[in-house]
Length: 173
Image 1 (cartoon, rainbow, N blue to C red):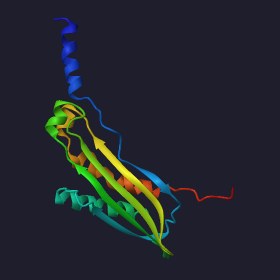
Image 2: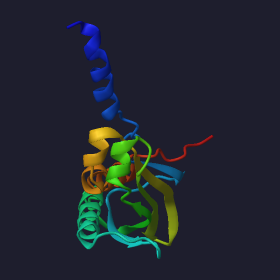
Image 3: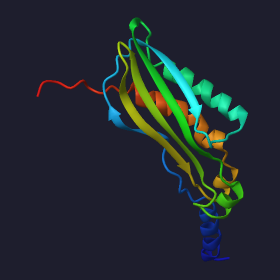
Image 4: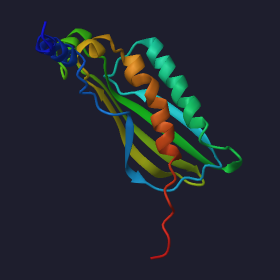
């Protein structure tokens, strides 16, 4: 048997596991001002009116986000406080069969808006941004992927990391 006979088989297996997925969930800020991490934090998580998701996933995501974002704030300066509001605007589980058949079909999508408001003293929005994560891997990997393993477990960490990223305060010009 020649080595060239195995080439079509290897190409076929390679095509079944093609990866067209985007990278990790990343929050991009449209507005980003400095945050005093010594302050207290209140976290509000909600779904937009037309967003539906399984109750177990909602409970997991809500607890995960609250735990990870709360860890960013030290809560040592009670006179300073922030509210982090997360609104899930898109949650689409897609079709595992379609992903298996062809990369790009049956995508899983997650989108959320994130707003950090300073509530003590005053009410000022200090950060505003959008978190987007799409998953479109094809083949065996795409067909066996789940929303929980591929997206939901990454959301809390992505939001906490983005909130924890220090934005330098504007200095004298």
